[in-house]
Amino acid sequence: MTVRIVTDSSCDLPQQVADALGISIVPLKISFGNDEYVDRTTITADEFWRKCAASAELPQTAAPSEGDFTKVYEQLRSEGATGIVVIALSSSLSATMQSAVNAAKSVAGTIDVRIVDSRNASLGVGLTAVECAERAAAGDSIDQIVALAERLVPRTHVFGALDTLENLKKGGRIGGAKAMLASALSIKPLIEVRDGLVEEAGKQRTRGKALNSLLETLRSAGRVERLGVLHAQCADIDDFVAKVREIYQGDIMVGDIGAVIGTHAGQGTIGIAFRTAD
Image (cartoon, rainbow, N blue to C red; front, side, top):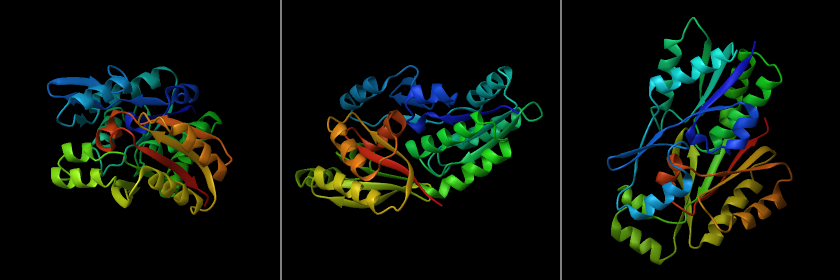
């Protein structure tokens, strides 16, 4: 059996990593007013951030259609895949997983497609997809890969430090006066993905303290077996990665926060995604 891994563009995986492991990425869509773009296809991260800065309102994100997933499933089947495992953006955050499920029903009988809810976002999705793809390449069965993914879900964590409240203000999640006061006080919110939802994880008075809080989270996480760092066009990313290396000596995947996650997190966000040992 040849098993292939599919995920969606919320994963924030570097394209070269996805290509090397044969991971198919189904893109979400991004709209600025009446202008719609296909994530990672018709809009780059740089273009996305430029448009965000020029827009008074947040762009809108839309899940892939059932047909978008069906097209990928059929393409992989034509390439010789006999099974597909989809690692999807948390079903509590998007309708993406439902589209993947509906598409799986449409190809039932022609190829075995299994859907796993990552209960995560950004590289929390990406790291799980990578591990599953490595096992697929090693010849694991579809049942083994699904079981692995389900074990990884509760052990995969994402934390982030936002640099600006502008996106939260544009999105109506924080009032203008409150955002202005918080910005004047240099408040930097911390977030985490918890039980499939993005939740507050505290706040710090400076960016330095916020990033140090991420490092402390990693330091206190116990034995970490896989780690990624995600960022949204951050000039200080190399310095942050260097500090992460003082705590974690394994390979570190560095991914750009794309349009899907960036819409809500905002430019300047830095985060960590990691999987803990059993």
